[in-house]
Image (cartoon, rainbow, N blue to C red):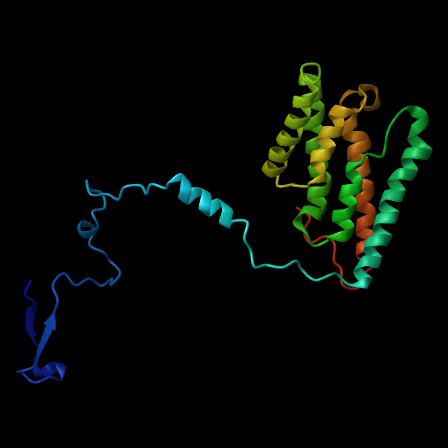
Length: 235
């Protein structure tokens, strides 16, 4: 298209013979795109790109390649406080289990607390180790485990184990409380003898009481370390 011609007068600081070429359809927004040229909203819309299985599989294998390296080893000071926190945290729960609850046929100690100790004493900055994740993650997982046991235990125990862990993961995601040991908490509810849990009482003892006891130790010990701050967040 031919460009428009405009003559600027002397009042603009130019001579009468000065000519400026202005392209047509000039917009104040230089980023505006002509929709018709891109066929947006027309029959010429872009078609979805087809990916062959070969391309997909090649991309899948490439995901195993990485140039990243593992982080450096933590400091000796950090190891010492991890050791102290773990021995006191697990020690407290184990003492309550073996000296308080055994005579009443209750349990206070479950295997998933050992995994929690690794997180809350060994990886204190991890989102997975924060109080919300520790307590709520175990709590919702225990609810899931007990519910699946009641509903499906007599149907298929293997399927019940798989289902309880899988639902617990989703439940922790939904409540923003992802805590890996929670998966073990859900499955332990399926595997142990029913009389040990007294129905849904498993949620409160050993799960909730044990998690709170571990949290108490974590709050005290972790904050004694000069380079530690716990928690990073509460909610």
